Length: 140
Image (cartoon, rainbow, N blue to C red; front, top):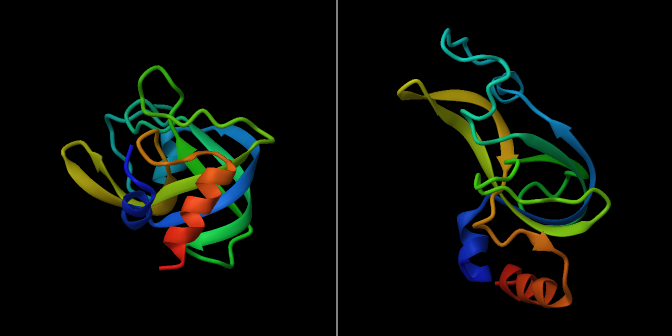
């Protein structure tokens, strides 16, 4: 796992917030208004590596759009797909990437932006140590 400073620099969005809901998603959720691909099923989330969208109520924004009060964060579903096993009702420090494209059928496609995280970021349940380290890095 990267240091707090490295993780902070790598991602686009760092917040503290409480997970309020979990929604199973499909490829059509992720693709949004992007053009259709004949070999891709609308329910084929395995292809993207994202299975769930978690609604997060934000308490503090350390990096990213400070006006956001609620966001959706996408992650996998487990079984080795690098998911973050969020628990509804639990507070987390979340390090997320803003995704604007996906590799589909051999090439990148532009899609509506979304936030995603995985187990190799420092996303974890809130602890005093995690908050102290994050606040120290965010000030610089």
